[in-house]
Image 1 (cartoon, rainbow, N blue to C red):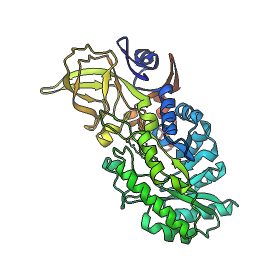
Image 2 (image 1 turned 180 degrees about the horizontal axis):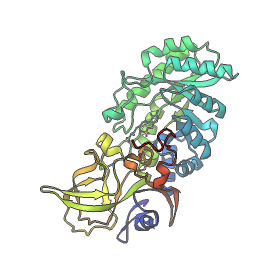
Image 3 (image 1 turned 60 degrees about the vertical axis):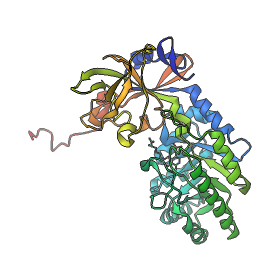
Image 4 (image 1 turned 60 degrees about the horizontal axis):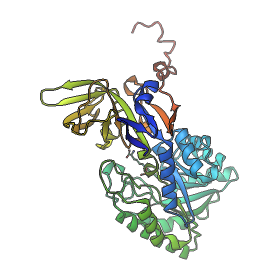
Length: 423
Ligand code: LLP
């Protein structure tokens, strides 16, 4: 068990979270090495026998220790910025296992990727392909390109994280792809190696994948018939984990679908899972500062805020919250609003959430916080971002400390013409 109660305390593997709170303070993200490895192994095993490369989407959690754990287990990296290329390399992902996505790659970012010698650029527009070709050709290089296709399939996910429908900013409409391939094939600085897609995040059903994969298979055949060598097919990420009690597609069912729909194309397959690999390998630990009784509701006011875990404020997302001290079996649950200290009404993690009694000073844990948690944190309100800890059995290490308050503004400066001004 990676996370759960042991002897009355919530633990990460063999470590009581109370010990982490005492040593590191709160709010703090805590990750389980065993769970990270288990998730990667299960995902990779579901694709066994296929010519597959699994590239972890670093945007979900780019802490070096997390990326290193996955890289050691065999993951490549799916990156979206020069910063993520640098992180992936620093965590030991070889350049030839890095794919680079994103609608707005700048020439500096493309240069960084060409310098590193990455495996492939996933390009999302014709101007981007032309710019990359000019840049690469000028350096005497030929950049391997997968063209990101918008398959016009509704993934039925949260509207704010859907991506594969016509009208989204992502990819190129599927019906425009064959003509685009014909136009750009002669560009000197790119080699068209394949097509890619990413349907959306947190898909709760395999049906949209089936529709999209079938469309991609048809497209690959059509492109080949027109004389294009389509060697690679990048199927993106999107597999979810339950945040509550949802029943989601398993990697095994996903793998079976891949075999059924695209395996016979003989393409090298690339996968970009983010959330599936890390979401339930992490929790966020926080402390209750006050319990405030309103006239008609009770508030648990935490030392964690929307800037530490943005998903509830941004998407209305659910994270299960549990006290670190295991509640008594017969403890009566009562509705509470779980909120942070930031002066914004959206700084609310949950409203009317049924919780066992929790007192001021107690620790609580937000589950399933390993994906899109710490990476989306900010220092809004000049609040230091949360620390990060990696647990391995009964030991733990701080893998990113909480910044000091002075770290938050040490690079700011007051221009000389303002010094001495009395406003
Ligand atoms: N590949 C591409 C091109 C992507 O845009 C994404 C995620 C992934 C892979 C990884 O998707 P995953 O396997 O994690 O679903 N912040 C949101 C999620 C945004 C996802 C953006 N793209 C959240 O907290 O739910």
